[in-house]
Image (tube, rainbow, N blue to C red; front, side):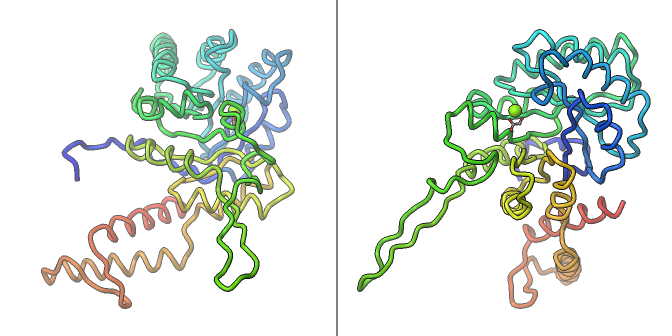
Length: 325
Ligand code: GLV
Ligand code: MG
């Protein structure tokens, strides 16, 4: 290990993150009874400019009145390039109690963006003697944000998670997309013809791989949770599962749900299976035994397990314990 100790963000379940437009008071109420681990109450892109003020009022009322149980609650503020942003922060923090956990900052482009919001939040927290320190969720969804992702991830001790905002990212980079967060059949490779002739194969590629993998590394290097963003075709559960699985395999801890039907899919895919958990427990037991006997490496079911296997197994067991509550 490096001599540098990476401070880990506060541990939270973040398997699913439900987006709820602040302009829809009924949906805010309904979200409270959902199975989402995290809910973000949106003031940004799901709210039309004429509805921004009403949405802010709805969210303030929801934070004061609705029982969100043990869910993590976040508010997505407007971007730093708008005149809504400062009032989003000030009004929401000045007029609510300590129920709010996180502020989600969209379209973060530089570390200074995070610094600016940190300053504002710190002033309101101090002025109002807020007890619970607000954490930050940062959406990486522009070319600028992706270019500066390492500095952004390290910009504030409030940072808890990085999110891949696939829709805006595609707009910013001018990628060609067919569905938000889905594959594009034009992104693929054609194999050589088989020896002796015959059909060539065409393999679809994952056009989001680079962005997600880069976000995972920047997040983990700074002790943050990497979270995959939206999947636009809410009718396509299989498509959602494929994208969520791929992000999870790459190291993401969760995925957004932009419709309630996507919550269970995200929770399921981002929970370790019983089989994986019992295998992880077996690995930990085998290693404990090996350590007692002074052996560094050991085989289990014919496969080598070493100290890296322990860390992976510990991660899995910790996650399973957190889910079990
Ligand atoms: C989320 O905000 C996105 O742009 O995908
Ligand atoms: Mg966006």
